[in-house]
Image (cartoon, rainbow, N blue to C red):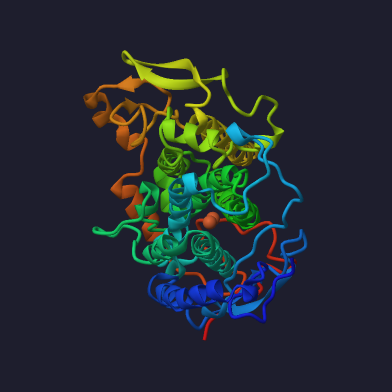
Length: 474
Ligand SMILES: [Fe+2]
Ligand SMILES: [Fe+2]
């Protein structure tokens, strides 16, 4: 399972033994590079970045760090080790051997799942391409680029599956991945959150905390798939994803920390005074949490979904940690509580668990999101400040599912149009909020220096000091 870096496309799937596939991927590679140069991190072609590169898919596989010019990063195809005699863990094929080829009857559904996941990966690179101009530190700039190259690799991961298992339509889908673009009026990315702008570093940290975490849950349920190559691809992607969420969680923590230091020093909880001192006030951070959390909740889809039920029953997509769940793994008679708007209030109803697969995954996600808030609130508490960051109600600001078109307050009351219009500015980022945050975004590129709106990280990368030159400019 060692990764072969002598190949034009590094891989641990014995690509050289399949000449046809190798040639097909090698002819996609220049298109990918063209996309990276055109829509990847802007103006960075000659930067030398202290990046990690996977040298194996074992637990010590991330031990390799060194300076790389990003266009020279070795994007490749890495699958987790096969599990011997893996059996299908759920659905109507439970107990049968996992599939190593795509069953004909599931071909188009599986392709759709892979395309939808794959499309998000280059989308986030496109969304983040201007952030390098305003980095708060070299440490953060390096982390941004690390995430960008890994999202590029995630695209490779999905394109490999499309090329290797879906023939001609797979190759066409792989091409289309480079033709849709985030926010493009004619050919947007597939999912809404991936067409939103990531205009500044506050949005970026929120995105990596909340939206990359959706990625974690989608990948984790695809990692349960009966289609073994997909499962193994996603298992390895999850190890990369963990770093993205770390960047989000610690990024927000450092902003909270800085804000609390300013509040403490000035003896104030007046947002205007905090802003005047160059930090981001806590109510503004809360509004950004509300926004990014709610658009990320939408990514889980409808509360009741026959598609999700079919993915589960046919064994294409499982639940989070499927094999650790103690039940029949078929959900024949099981129910699951689902929140729905009804007659002007929100009720919690038991629904068939099969139909509520999306909702269950959303529940897992919500619990996971809360853990970060608890840590950030600890920071606020240790500064003796009376303020608690909260997750808004799951029905707040939704565009997909039962809450679409229903105005829900952060605390879960259904509101009239009028009441919503009067209050939403307290709950979601306004143009003024964006303008204020944007005004703070001045690049800081001296080693060890930090923008005034964010505290330094607790430690550097891979044992290096904080004032290490994580990025070198030409
Ligand atoms: Fe990703
Ligand atoms: Fe990610």
